[in-house]
Image (cartoon, rainbow, N blue to C red):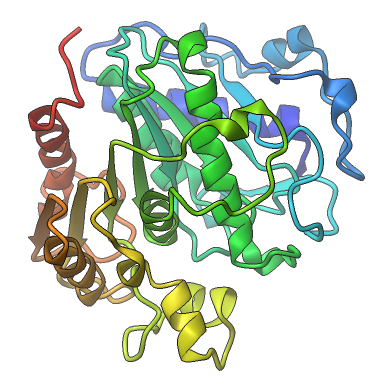
Length: 358
């Protein structure tokens, strides 16, 4: 099913509302405010993309099953994303048969979920999907609803997929993530966010992307496009959940690492350039790692390598290794050992002064 931006946001709002109802034992009011583009729609120049509908029409299109629940969207780039290329289809594909994933990202953006009782902190969240799709229904919007309930502004990243023929290939999602951090910081006052309390949370390939974003904050991945790019891309901390970390043999067994990012026969320089642990310096932020020992996709070697790299340069790091959970468990289900990571993560950020009472 091909979706324009309005339909995508409506589908996302439905998912968000369903997740919030499922997650909250006690019913509460909406945690989000308005669905609207930021910037003048007339300035958008991406090819073959239908124009944004009026704000009122967009809001009215949200599901009637979600009274008061609205979603906001921010386009990452004022015009064409860097590097050119991209998928031929004119807009997103939202595939419910695969559990609610997005492909065909022609216009990378942020889905914004606002808390009812903000604590001044914010998270940029990146769902996984092997850099071939984005699992917003499993690792994006459910996580956003959970973090918003804890008082955080949450920005779910809809990033370009390097498998979709972008000119800058594996750097395309990195550019989107770096731009996202700068946009959040540039608009911190508008959202009531402390610009020094911006964190990252990523899952699987999204964990790889957030790991790169955390350790590469001082590397400019694209030319400035506006004043927002004068902002720092540094973040206060990062949570990496069953992340892909290294592309070095013999750990490069996932499609996302072996084929999508560096091809079938990468050089050692390519492997190193896209291995997060190889880029760690003492300037990296504190990191939280969570992993299941029985993960058949991203083995425990990935977070272990990140843990050791951070410890070697004196960066604070906490890791939790669970006996069972497999890969892609998201927030988990009751009774699953790996589901404990979420409460442990909140305890960790609270201890670091990132989560404050409201």
